[in-house]
Amino acid sequence: MERSKSSDVKRKPGDEDGTSSGRSSKVLRAEVWGNQMDSLSKEIEQLRKEKNKLNDRLARFEQAFLEGRISEEKYENLSAPLKAQIAETQKEIQATRAKLEEVIKEFKEAQAMETEGSG
Image (tube, rainbow, N blue to C red; front, side):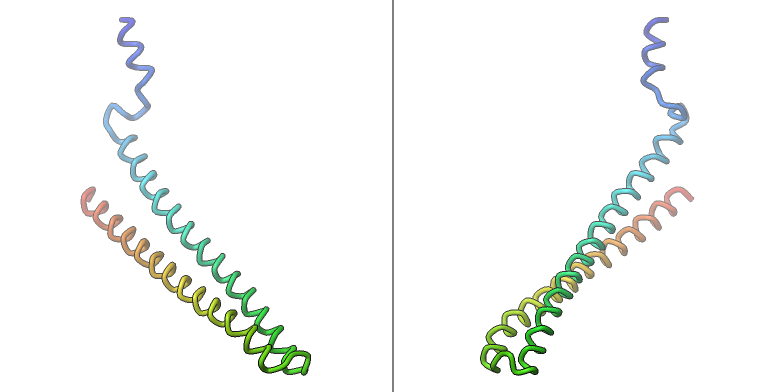
């Protein structure tokens, strides 16, 4: 009798028929996919903020050049590395966006397979 009680304590409600554990694993998988998508979305947002800051700096250099506060040579020397950083950041944004789209596609495929398997 004592042994039976200890095994009952470890058992979760609904485990007898397996519905609880099946449902929770679906929820866990959805959370993992969701976390991955959130992480990539946040990374894209951070990269966009970084790109905006770089564009703002470039605009300030352009304004200084147009107002005659810096020479064309100095403007070119200051703007060239910024333009390269902006281009690199844009590539990172595109690569991360492609990863996000792939994760979304895989998630939808996994959901469809899960639905087919249970239906």
